[in-house]
Length: 348
Image (cartoon, rainbow, N blue to C red):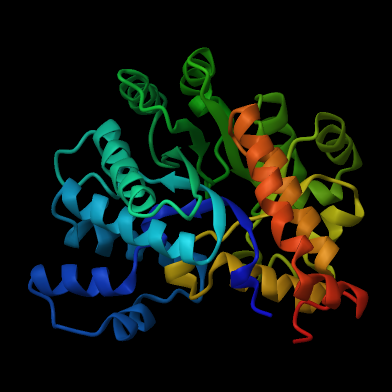
């Protein structure tokens, strides 16, 4: 049974790296590039190392033309998520890459939100919840970060849930974004920090002191028991991007993968898709790889999704509704038969 039929929650999907390849091919041709098929272009844009991401972002910035492009891309992405039974997604918006010339970050958010809304209103037999998280660029200085957040909180769209402090290749101090984070928190925006995959556990610990409500990556925290204690005590979720972490050499094998080690350390964990178009994966693909290589059973998958619902940025009423939605597949006759047979989701 394909995991595409199971209810899922994606807590870290980077919008710029999730745009449909056929749309990218159309934009490339419009920009005067050589006409290629969507699958061919996807292969060309596929990344094998994280240091290739800036080049892909620069390419995307060059072919985007208007907010209509962003709305169309969000519409197509939301349709795909609905087809994959993703019931909640948290889209990370790199406003600098997606600015389409003179667009302000708030206009980028509004355009993406409009596309998701259009996809959901097309049908009344599906369910997709979504929120938007805007990234504070690793290269922006303190004043630029404050200006970005200030622009977001004016006429803030209802589904703008928070900000993401991007990973800093130079491991600069988090004090760079302290004023922006404080402004965000005063305006009830959540704070996510991408930290801990490049340097030691001190950066993850600093992110917790900083008030981060979610950590993405966080591998280095496994080397510091004090940080693990903080994560457990505060029930601060750690979101794993399995394909990206394997690509970046965060683990030599699946047996030593951070996701497995966090689970063994009783840290609240969830799985995100990261940049699915550029890595050639999807949330279903990520969960399938985890299930096969870490020997997760049906209950493990259900529990992972339940944890993701708990960790998601949403109203309590929606959290309850999503929890009920996630439970539906568990009671299907085929799923029950699989569970009795040993719980292997790929047995059929």
